[in-house]
Amino acid sequence: MQNDNTLTSKKLTDITGNDFSQAYEEFLKQGDFISLTRQFEQGFTQTGRDNQLSFNVKKAKVSILDTGILLVEPENSTTSVKPSKSIVISSAIHGNETAPIEIVQQLISDIVAQNIQVKHRTLFIMGNPVAMNIAKRFQTENLNRLFCGKHQDIAPCFEKDRAEKLETYVSDFFNAGTDSSDSDVTNYHYDLHTAIRNSKHEKFAIYPYQGDKPWDKEQLSFMAACGVNTILFGHGPTGTFSYYSSANFSAHAFTVELGKVRPFGENNMANFSAMTEKLTALICDEDLLLNSFDNKDFNLYTALGDITKVSNNFKLFIDDSASNFTDYPVDTLLSTDTGEEYRTTQPGESIVFPNAKVGNGQRAVLMVVPTTLS
Ligand SMILES: [Zn+2]
Image 1 (cartoon, rainbow, N blue to C red):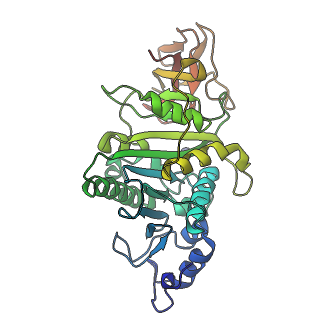
Image 2: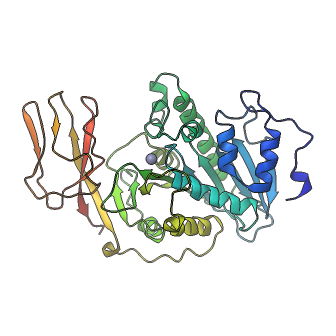
Image 3: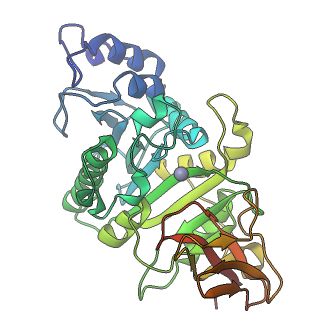
């Protein structure tokens, strides 16, 4: 690390007034962004693009914008490739989903150690540092329901504040990419998660609802190359982080579920190597070596509808331990409620995200059916 990157003469404090300088020096040496983020979970006093927390690596500028927010910008003039992509890679929108955090950490430490050269603008995010520190999905509110302005509808809490900040960082990032280039810039957002329950297909991705736009087959091929060949097509607007980027910035975006939640250090990172390698290739502008799309390489699902809990008489006949994408024969009784019942009607009809403990009027199960793309 070069000397001009040290900040020994500057006193930096976090939002609660704690001295930040030493932790930052440590980060410059070790590249441990998890540690830095967890030490200053509430955020830094000094935020924004033109802050002092910037240093240079291989022909790129690295800036820490806030706790868990790290921006990498390649130098336009010195790279052979013109930056034409703006890429968001996010993790820890749910704080206990550690594998995605470790993937983001791997990429950041490779950048800080100058093992790789980033050629496209990239924004790395560890979304909920408070939840990371208590090893919970969230502290007060599920952050991945609060995007697209839905944070405005809830009472003050860390997640409300954080959702608003994340929207601002992401929107500034995509807007700056468009403003600073005289050519077309393509936006990407991969929001990495792990699931609470088992899944018949270990890894899967939710492709946010696209309205009239077609599903992008090259993006599906990219997902497959990342080791994710089960895709659930979104069926309407939501408050998820990936939908926010897709709907507002036309980003190629996915919520990627990489298997089951485990504590820090208990993830078999070899299981995620394809994801880490392809994300590295994407940000470094290496050949992605994608296969052309073929339905037979995928498990594609489209939403059929929700089983909604209407009253306190709701009964769900799906075991709590049932895996996502478990399918049932036609005419299987899955739930009863006041005056109604739900029976499967389609071959291959399968469940996703079953949860009987929701409030009245909320979705207890998402029903999906296999599909193909023409
Ligand atoms: Zn999650």
